[in-house]
Length: 124
Image 1: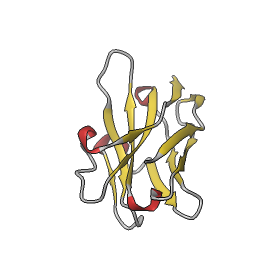
Image 2: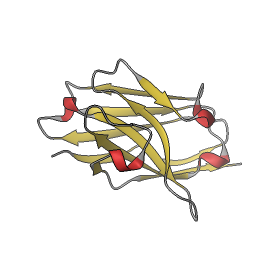
Image 3: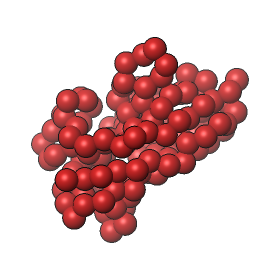
Image 4: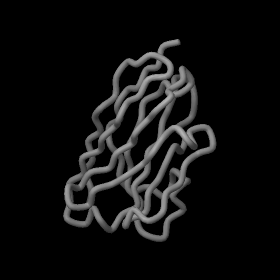
């Protein structure tokens, strides 16, 4: 089992940056692909970014390509989401999640474990 806690959210002006962190517990953390999702008010939760267990493969939704970077440190059981050039439409609660190997990492049902989320608000 993997337990995760997100941090690093906050209020930032458009064009600014934030770095989200996800601290995971569990001896098998390095076995899981990790993903970031977000949910804006009144909208469904959506995929943002994912990274394979080794860090060798990453995926991003089109709207964040070139602006967001996902990374992980398996020695520290940490996953990060560096968010640059933030836009008001990036405002949402951001969730960290873990998926077993071989999963479709862009799909919510693939993820077995979820954090509680951290709020990101981008003002115009």
